[in-house]
Image (tube, rainbow, N blue to C red; front, side):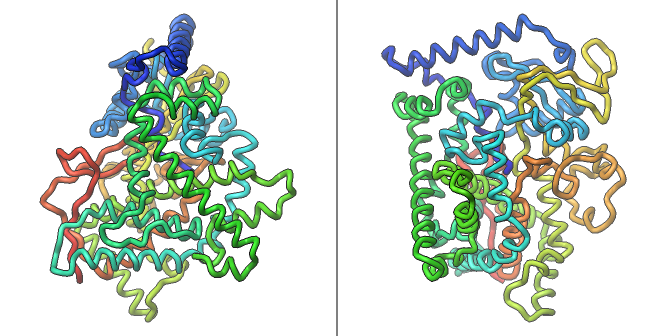
Length: 558
């Protein structure tokens, strides 16, 4: 799965420097900063041909260019600007002066995600932090353990199982429709649709993924899990030094330090981790008990055993005991699945509603397509195949995911020296044209998913325009000729290769179901409040000038 990489790029905080006594946390800080200083010195003394790659100056030795790359307002503009100025590979400076690069060149992305994928792994800081937050799941493992988990999970996302989930998506979609209807009984009202997209996204993955209900979608009664998890990403932006130190510490020591260090941010973060872990354990216990009691008990649960975790547990039991995933890995898989599915789906869903509110002609055209197929079939709910074959709905979803990829970046670190081929040459600091880049081990690459999706050289002069009709005609030859390695419609939204997001069909299907339900019942119009989109590794809306997330939209019952 492609998890929002906001855990890696964090604003400065001084929690380590404010500890009053020389306890274990102080020693950890001294150790971490010493390692960082040594790392910086090694980089300084060891020049490399990679240093000839051009890039912007770093505004900070401590934070490097990450402060620009992940600026909530201007980060995406920064990505566009450096690509336009320097080309498809841009040299950046990371935390403590580490070598990093921003990559949007199609051939280089293919090498990182497909051809040389074994050499490009998730950064150690990502794996270390994810192991504390989520446990031993897909987001915190690599190598054989990761491959084994992925092999166990992939069948649960097959087309056959997706067909079985459609009725569950309709159930949740209708609950959401009823909740919104209660908000607008007295006429058109301003409704914070981000709140509803987040809550419904959690309930969708809860019922279809876990066979568990987190949130009844009752007005003003959000679930504890929803309220906690929405703060997870912002909190991680406040602990940069901790993330830099984490890879050098054993897992148990990481958790221990996170719990004892007198930092309000860390305490809030560990509180959220506790809520996630408690919910995952409750769900796992319930599923196991039902399986042990037999088929009748399974049938009585939400989703009747067709949810993803039930399928995974049954498959796990069929394995030889030595090959079964232990409980720690099952819990890690569940936590990662819930978080990734909730956040990315919520972001994409909110963007869809915002675009519809701003473009009434697109909204009317979509609504007409949905109403027409319902009239033709005389059916209240549409099947998997019918939903998949609605041309304009499909084109609309594709264009949202292309132009507004919820996760703009994906990270990989080279574990050994390598060479990246380029589709288009770049000019080095020495003025020489380069068609390959020599990359030293330890270099982190920021895969520019959003930039590749909006390249005018690939998608044409209207690459930055929202145009669903582009998908209803043959794409420009330049799109196919670019050979972007993305697994979905020539886009990098879901990454590519063996580490690509395995749940992309799941995400598309739930979005199509819920959107088709809401379009039949409501008209969406823009609020007078200006909506701006922020990015923290994941794109989310807020009202201009506000400090919290939100997306007020005028909703009217049809």
